[in-house]
Amino acid sequence: MLAAWALSLLNPAPLGLRRRGYVRQSGLLHARSRRCRAAWAPHLERARRVIAAAAEATAQRGHAVILGSGLLDDVPLDRLAALFARVTLVDAVHPWPARWAAGRHPNVRLVTAEISAGLTGGSAAFCAGADLIVSANLLSQIPIVPLDVYEARGREAPPGLGAHLIETHLAALDAVARGAGRVCLITDTVQREEVRAGRITDSLDLMFGVALPPPEAAWDWDIAPFGEVGRGHRLIHRVHAYPDWRAARA
Image (tube, rainbow, N blue to C red; front, side, top):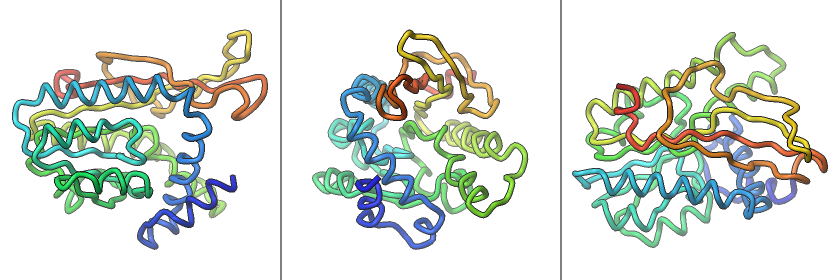
């Protein structure tokens, strides 16, 4: 928790996003990713491969946009910067490791945006005309901060808020897919709790009931290995990958 607190102080972000909890959430994710580096490695490598394959399958390579770029652990930034004339990284918080990595490439820029509001109106400007748009392990994260805000204020969230936010993002991806060269979506969909014997003791729908089409690829992400949230159990997320979202929706 001390590492997450320190990262929350150090990572730059607009005051409004900081007050809504995005910097805190980024710090928690950053700290966990470092504690669980070995357990997360297979998931991150598969995500990078999916994004790299989507990039290489994109015919026009003028502009790539990464939504939910975060720490860049799951983003093959060097490959994207080599393939595309411009790469835009979009997130509510760009931690310092990501800023340093982006700074190595003159054709990479950072955009700070609250993606939970969808990609409509002015926030869609950074996606306009993009040849590749990637939603990178973002979809299940979108409801977290808005729901936390209601809980922190002692208020009950509107019914269906989580599903609404997820559907808004998917609708935005559908819209930009009709005009962009390619949309790539990677998201965790279900969380299951397992004990050491392998028995599933609990399950959580990270999509809040929103149905997704069959994925082109799927795998397990050991997001909280034994010892992270308890000695005798771990949390595993099921990940779906869609290197061509438009084709998956057809």
